[in-house]
Each structure stands twice: as structure tokens, then as C-alpha cells.
Image (cartoon, rainbow, N blue to C red):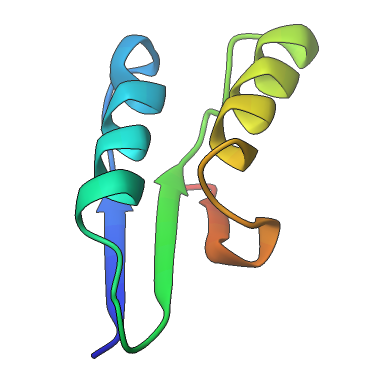
Length: 68
């Protein structure tokens, strides 16, 4: 079925966790979505690096950025 992952993890491990989820826990028969709590990066540059890292494992339509 479909899977949604809600990541509320420190910046230092975000890409490691996202990579692990993308490689090992994506749905084989449905869709997979990843919700990430903001702040997203420390500044514009780190935000761009995190986005690039996430896009290495997921499509943009699988990534949701949530500002609390």
C-alpha cells in the first residue's frame, strides 16, 4: 500500500534517514511520501544542499516540507 514518512530529525541526520527510508522502505505497490519538518537547512545554501540530497533519492512530488 501507500506509505507516508514524517521526519522530525536533526539536520545532521536528515539525509541519512531519508536515504535509508528511500532505499529500504518505499512502497512497491503504492506511493511513498516524505514529510519533513522545517526549518529546512540553516540558510539558503544549506537548504539547497539538503534539497539536492533529497532529490538524489526521491522525486520532488514525494517530498513535502512542513513549517510548524
